[in-house]
View 1 (spheres, rainbow, N blue to C red):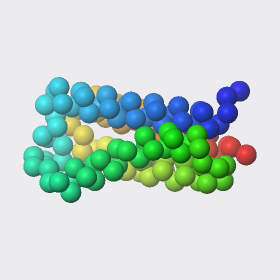
View 2: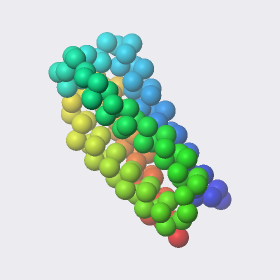
View 3: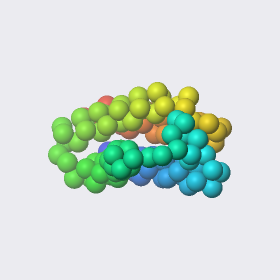
View 4: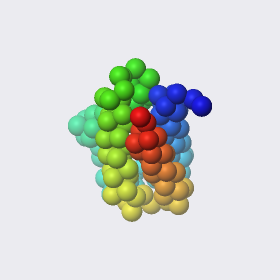
Length: 120
């Protein structure tokens, strides 16, 4: 069996790739401007998006390097945050592919919570 750190890191990579796939599809489909009815993003909004999107990338590294108790709680807290954030935002996505990818991301969040929760 793989070390829980590697499994958690892999799930964060899968989540980030799912988010990136959604972003690429949104750009090619022209749905970017339709998100939430906002067509003009401010620098503060872009900074917020960057911070939000770097969190899963950071969790890949933290899952491999943090000591056990901190690692477990960091994974639980961040995964629950992303689950709730995406669950609330799910109705705002205009396309079926977006909704599908968000649900896939929710599954990855549940897996993260499950693996971190079972980690002893």
